[in-house]
Every structure is written in structure tokens, then in C-alpha cells.
Length: 297
Image (cartoon, rainbow, N blue to C red; front, side, top):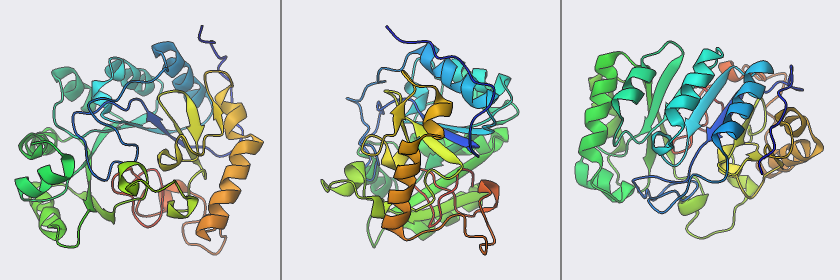
């Protein structure tokens, strides 16, 4: 039986952003996928009530932004409900989708104040894009990018270079011509299928994980970021309040390991970005994080 966790009035610490990693199910099977999602994936063990509790705890404790991600979050049966819930509580919510298919309900929801959309794109050539995604997805994704722009939905797109010859520059110019304003470019991160079988290594993280942000996975595990989910979990929201996990020793220890492995100091007082996630460029978004990891691009 799932425990119903009481929602605290305040979170300990400066956590302002959460990834809600709803599912491992996805229509695609992208080569660089950081958590190896695909058609055989599941929605995990988190129930609707579990997610409601997490969103309530976050909203009541100072979190301002969520990214709903997966897998493909629009495949989750409670996805629309959960985003509506978060928006109604005053949170800004980004939905990270492959844009293969969005129902009318999703399109309507994404036009709400506080909602935005993110996607990954790989090449202006359908064959090359489809090789990365493992499915003939290019036409649908491109059509829905166009639709999002036409509807005025805030959209950011990320391009991951999986090979040295991939047409990433051409893909960027294509997106810019369509009116996409926020575009990031990156290399494959060494996690999930992107690791090609190698064990997870904290040195592959950006170094800003766990600072003002955290991730919650489909089984309730909390980690410093989505790239560290599973192998660096620091607690589970199904049996421990979110506030306790975020302010706990395990999270602090995980952050220490990450800083040591990456040689980073995200709170360097001499840094122009400091510790404010809004001020750090090139945010960390699975599939296309920049060189510095922050939650909102």
C-alpha cells in the first residue's frame, strides 16, 4: 500500500526546480537516450496520488519550475492531469516531448500560461534523424514543431551530435528559420544507451547537479539530476517526505561526490552566474544539456 506523505509548508534548502521523470515508455528508441527508454518501458510504481503529493510538496516549499520528462511523458495516463495540477498551483511547467504525437488535450494545455514545451531534434535530413531515433519519426516531429511555433507555445529545441558528420548546423539553421528561438547543441552524454554499456560515472555529469534542483523518477527515487537517476538515488518519495530527502545527508554526500568527480564549484562567489539557476546559461536538459547544467534555458 502506498503511503500518503504529508505536504510540508517549506522545503529546506534552495531547491527551485524539479524534473518529474514520469515514465520509461517511449515510442522511440533514441541512441543517445540517457535512461534507455523505449516501447518496452513502463510507467513505474509511482501512482497518481504519489505524484500529486510530490507536486503539492514542491509547490508548498518554494519550487518554482518543473520539467515533465521521461521516456515520453505524454504517454503517461495521468500526464495531462498532473501538468494541470502543477499549473493550478502556480508552478511553471515545461513538457519535454519527442513531439511524435500530442493529443488535442495536450495542445490545449500547452497554451496555458506558465506552460512550455521542449523537444530534441537531430538533423534536417529525415533519414539521419530517424537513424538516431530508431523510428520514422522525423516528419511527425517536424510537423509538431511547426504547430507549436504557430500556436505561440514557448519552445526550446536541443540538437545532440551523435557522430562527427551529423548535420547539426543545418538542423539548427532549419529550426531558426521556422522561428524556434531557443536552441542548444551538445554531445552524447555517457548514460543509458549513450554509455554503450559502460558503468555510470559521476565524471560524466555537468557538475551542477543537485544545486537548486533534483529529479524524481517513475519509481519515486530522488537523485541530483535525471542523468544520475537510479545509480545515485538519495531517497524515495514514496516513503520519505521530499523535504527530508532534499535536505538530507545522502543528497549532500552525492553532491560532494559529483563536485569531486567533475572538479566543479557551481557556487563559486566569483562566478558571474553564482548559485541562481536563472542566471546560468546552457541549461541541463536530457538529450541536449549544455556545458553548464541549469534547469531552465
